[in-house]
Length: 71
Figure 1 (tube, rainbow, N blue to C red):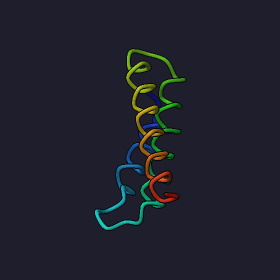
Figure 2 (cartoon, rainbow, N blue to C red; figure 1 turned 90 degrees about the vertical axis):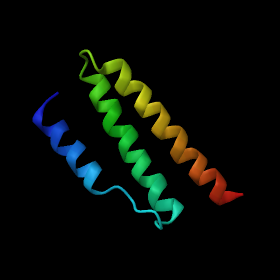
Figure 3 (cartoon, one colour; figure 1 turned 135 degrees about the vertical axis):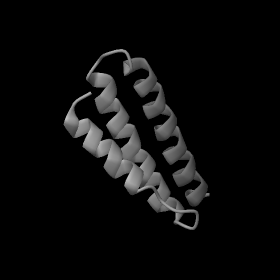
Figure 4 (cartoon, rainbow, N blue to C red; figure 1 turned 60 degrees about the vertical axis):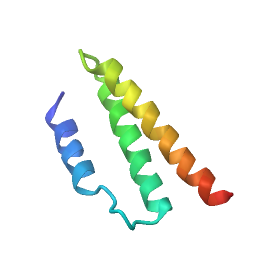
């Protein structure tokens, strides 16, 4: 994992939405998380499969949040 990815992980952790954040903000954060974990997976290595799984979970969570909003 390179330094850029580590920095982005830190930024993602720092920007995590709070308990009272609107669902749209939380969904956007999960989409950023998915994109970052896809980048980690693409980098290869021992953590690639786990990163791919985390990306998929984050995408699903974002989708659920936006679907609930549309309902």
